[in-house]
Image (tube, rainbow, N blue to C red):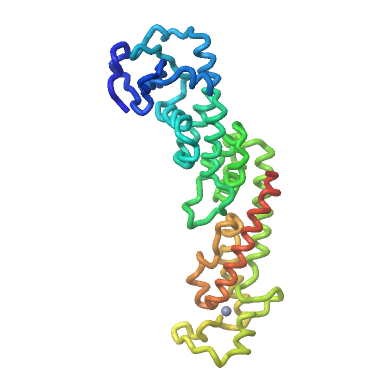
Length: 328
Ligand SMILES: [Zn+2]
């Protein structure tokens, strides 16, 4: 952008060259940025512009740039956001899906709302939903968790503008954050969340925690009755295994019997805090990964990998169950 608009504009104004159509017949001024556009097009997609052009009463009408009357937008719009608004209108949707950052998407939603433009608003809701995707499970590998302030802001935005697609992820990101429920209890009014939402989040957190605890108490390489599956295989096939002197055990086998391993597991899970760490964020908390060093001393890779695979399956089930727990 940026070139001084011709004569009748003020010297401080700048033209947005991307949206400066030579055959445009109006100029829209957003802060100090000017956009030369088509009256009919804007009127056809925005109720705000339709009414504005129909009335033609605003005081700036007598001002012109490039021979075109200047129109103003409602307070709160920025040149960047209005530029994005025009990009959505001008570029085929298939080509621009995903170009908006989350901040831009939120700002554009505000802009589309002020300009009463449902088509841009609908597009933007899809763009925002990509940043709070409910189809992909929260994962430590896909970036750091969001702050609960971000999550609450999106929940409120979704409620105001009816964007159900972002709620599941946003609810989970808030309720899995350390300190969120404590902060909520300490000052419920500060978050402006409806009582029903708070109740659902509490309920989901309690139930997810229960499911996790039930799952996490079983040591790797054991069956439902707590008997070692690893040692059983070892007894049948002991001749095949070589000794690992560094770990003081047979290669590819867990150390000790099922009872001693159960005790060691409980020590790690209960006494060393994994149970509560995982209960707070059971979809993302990969116990085998987080406690690998301690677990490696006792369990063979095969047993740990099997436990991790079971957790992966379980967390997919828990993620599905959240729909019901959060009443989505
Ligand atoms: Zn094993």
